Image (tube, rainbow, N blue to C red; front, side, top):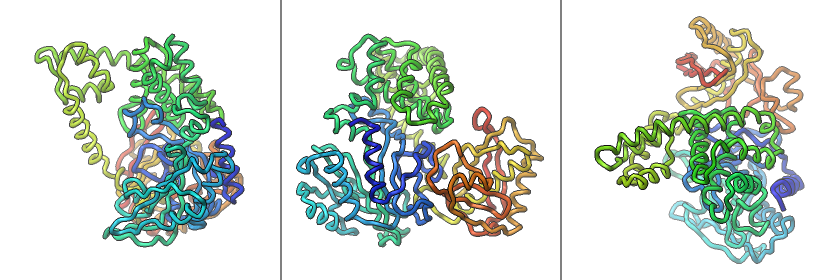
Amino acid sequence: MNRKQLIKKYLEFFESKKHKVIANSSLIPENDPTVLFTTAGMHPLVPYLLGEPHPLGKRLCNVQRCIRTQDIDAIGDNYHHTFFEMLGNWSLGDYWKKESINWSLDFLTKVLKIQKEKISVTCFKGDNKIPKDSEAEKIWKDLGITKIKFLEKKDNWWGPAGNTGPCGPDTEIFVNDVEIWNNVFMQYEKDSKGNYNLAKQKNIDTGMGVERTVTMLQGYDDNYLTDCFKSLIEKIEKISGKKYEQNQKEMRIIADHLKAAVFIIAEGITPGNSEQSYVLRRLIRRAVFYGEKLGLQNFTKEISEQVFKIYDDYPELKSNKKIILQEIEKEEVRFGLTLENGLNKFKKCVKENKSLCGKEAFLLYQSFGFPVEMIIEECKKNNIKFNLKNFEIEQKKHQELSRTATAGKFKSGLADNSEATTKLHTAAHLLLASLRQILKNENIMQKGSNITAERLRLDFSFPRKLSEKEIQDIEDLVNAQVQKSCEVAREEMSPEQAKNKGALGAFEKKYGEKVSVYSVGNFSKEICAGPHVKNTCELGHFKIIKEESSSSGVRRIRAVLE
């Protein structure tokens, strides 16, 4: 069974259980500023897991594209990936453990034809605050699954995402000792005192990795041999003249990193020095570094072409193909130029004392884009002492400073549906409508947002810097709507109806059968899933604190409520 067949069978199975298929959302999360990328299928569902009614109902399923960056240095083995797809099904206060476990087993044994004897599971063993998950254990036993292990919180518990919020035990499903599915039971809510209270809305959140499951179904123990990667590996073999068997680590890294880069650029991100842009730059440069170890030059575009063939079911790749390949190729060239400067810096650093300290090594990593592997290699080549532990200490210091500098990014998320965040989310709607009105440009669209309890950040399409008068006029117009005490109303309708009513939304993207449309009086109308106030009089005074460039053709405004 290949990738497309697995996805089709999964969605059809859960549709037969009265689930609605929801859109495969952007890799840039709209409702969770705690992370740079969508790391799981649950991210686009944050407001609904917290109680917001979903326009398609209480039973949902989808396949979601994801990026995880914490494993970049682990890429090179047979199963870690930066970009991957996750199959998921959800119950928003509807069915519970019995149905979830029953359907999981039915899909594995009846649809995928996996023998029950090959299946084993783990459940939460309990601790001094939460009892053992005997409910899940009994369901599995009643279904004839006898291989059950009980593990601690670090293995069989999810959440909360922050200090407080929804959380609960999970049960993980293994086939021949390979984990392929995780069913999370959001049974509790952790409060600010550390107590676990039974949740008002109990949710089911499951995740099944497409790549890992396809590998198991095709009888491999290496994800890179499946149709998710095969043509990428074959292309690398062809242009390098080398075999995969003798160069697995290098070829896996190149295939993984360039695939992830293609998908990130499709979201409108370009290589740079901060946040998503920095991750993208690091991925491309690591791919180039490992390509050079295989004797490859000017190769990224040719290999990246294969990603479009594997994932021809993603229209956003096809429509952005030209710019995606241009950006990858440009970064490959740019890295070549940077390497020269970086190598000169390296030579200066080690000229006198024949060693490279942690700070100097981190400078090469951070400012010149040297992969750690390259620093180690250059030191060996030049007989230079290099202490990797000291480098890692410097790296951790930088990560901690970054967290402090952008503290808002780490305060929000699933746990934060706070009053302050809710107010700023509504203010963002007023800001976008005001931009379009004051700048007399109905082509202005939101290109991204990040909202924490402290401030809002809105990226919007516009070609030039705003004047001081324009900024003041926009600010005044937002505050005028606040003072009018406009009612904020929510309606459910089809995307077509929303478009006909003049609602703003990314209509080039796939929506479900129904969407939530929020109207602020007669001033603003947008498709949105975030939390909102009932009336603009709750907002307070709106203040723009900064207007700047975000990227080519995109401006960024930061604002607060006083």
